[in-house]
Image (cartoon, rainbow, N blue to C red; front, side):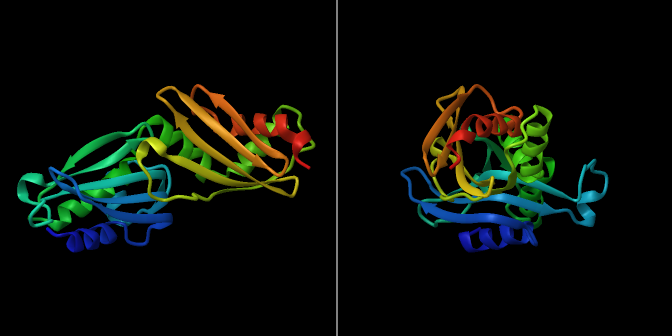
Length: 234
């Protein structure tokens, strides 16, 4: 199976998918070459075959970010029978999971790729960030601010807008455009080392960085940071 066939199968597997950003890269190596596809903001609409016998909570699955990685033979530059596997980025801490498929059955590869997204079998960081990004984040932040009695902040828009599509997993950065009190600001999120997370806010008045221990309740965290920064929103 060559890279052209591989690309066609992937496109078929993700037909009608909405993606914020998508890129692919071909990397040469000493033991094998790699074909990598990087996805940001992928929304996979469910079809009839997906619904049969599968417990689902909505009519689409959304994933903030993942990658599919295929190893290719050095000489012929294609997948061989003994290499009939691919890896997907399970979480933002560079953990990949391996999936085997039948190289003689393109439909099997298509089904395995769809299953990665349908099963939502990702790590907690990708899941938490996906929930924040694709479940009305501006409303979630606004509800939290209202709950804690903050009335002088109006968060009208939060959009996932990755500035880079392809990068090493240890340099993964998630970028959001936020409109608060009619002022446009940028927020970036990244993982620092193995246990720390950085929220970086770019305001007209400067750049402000905060450190967290986890990715739980992202909307509440962002709301607290915006409340702390509101005097600088000028």
